[in-house]
Image (cartoon, rainbow over all chains, first blue to last red; front, side, top):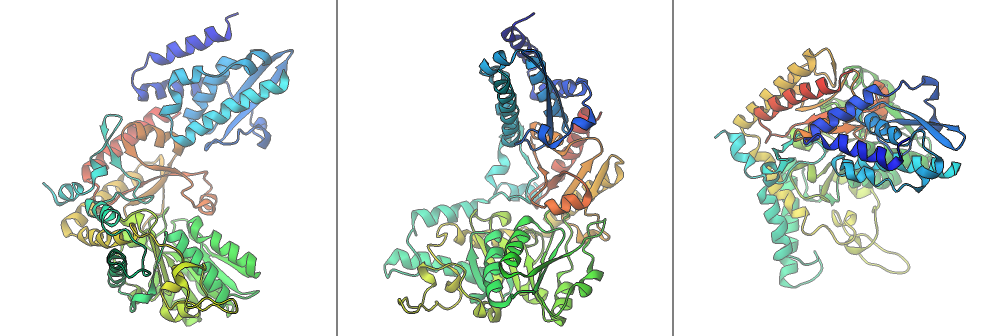
Length: 137
Length: 409
């Protein structure tokens, strides 16, 4: 199995293939579209990530010391972003996620290319993943 | 060069680039861009006339006070108010509305009385009334809009009772962009001895406002939406009412004499202008309203009209798009368009359009009850100003199509 850092490096490389931000958005939209369907009954208040302008749901399944994430959003770019995040972190151990500094997100240049409200949403997604992991360490 | 191209040069921000593309600014309903005349006045007030108002006898205090009071005269003339003391300077429309809610509420609203607000109001014209009703145990009633976004005027007479003290409506909703029939509303309300407040935040930009012709008791607006400095605003109130209302805030120049036993108030308008005023900002209302006047040029208006037709045709003919605020006659619609696109999130659209250089607004636009009424979590809004060009409108339409294509499932 690849290490968390190797997976992150791959995502950074994929993302850097696109020069134009519109193309990067296309990539995120595509990720959002390909995200595994999220069961309607899981769209509950307690799974909503607070602090996002669009609605984002995150569901966590614990298997041993590993965490598996599923997610959805009513906005497709946001869905692409959460898809990218859970693509990296789903299946990792709680310890690995809790110890990660999430700096790979900065390498993507995502934060500065989102509107401030979206950037806050991204921060909330990261915070939720981190907190969930810490709770399971 | 067209008239619009000429006047655009007066607005420095419009020449800016974003992501290497020319900025297409279509968020004018949130705040307008400022012309050089306003920026000049703002700077001039800071560089040459920076002194506190009304107090000192020294020269620059005098000059600053003259600028400030000349602005009051200019606003009075622009609104065609009868008396200069009917013009109160505030920090914006929100402050103006809160002033009325507090002071009119104190003077006239008792337990069990009623306030009516339109369903399409901005939060700033909802929440102050909710607070007032809570304080006074009064009742807040809502005048609904129909599916096309028009106020249900037919329901108004039935809503008014002898206990209704005030009806609050926008001149133009910041979401629907339809000009409300204020004169008609005033005539219905006054026949039942009920006062009318008009939230003119959008109205002051797009309509030629004459408060005596409208007949309203209060008219509130912000400076920053009508080309002036931010943190400026106006409350017009009929003198007879303002005189009966207690001060909103205490301190500074609003006093007559201050004694431990009893303090008296300054006459209007100072009674409502406590504390140090926006010395540099408020005088920008004068060049700002002059600009608003200059923009009422027939050639400029013709171009705005063409933009309106172009966008309306597009939004009403595209089956994927739902427009909110559908005019019955073209004259009642301002060039402000809120809409949603089937299966596409408004935020995604705004984000893609941003990267194409277009500034639009997405979300609830400070009108959550209206979003609920139309069953949406938000909308996309493109709001044009007289300085926008037909080319910008065409670019917006083409970009919107491209963005939808990217986002459609």
